Length: 60
Image (cartoon, rainbow, N blue to C red; front, top):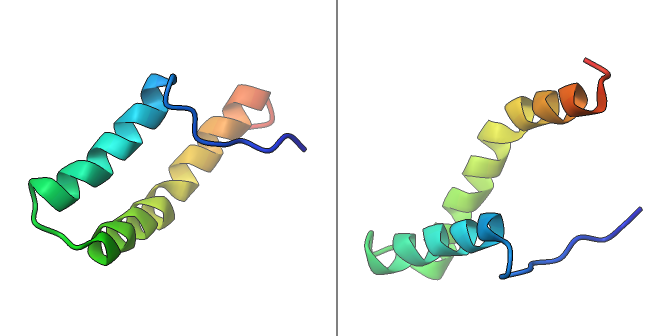
């Protein structure tokens, strides 16, 4: 399995980082709070993203 790492040349990665920075700078969150939100986003979007990944592989 290929290990994926952050690549700030990719727009999608830049957007995730930008969102985290915005939570801290614009929303006044602490680093811990921003990562709590990130974990909540991951858990709430996982089912939809898993379905998209299955469809992409043609196993839906």
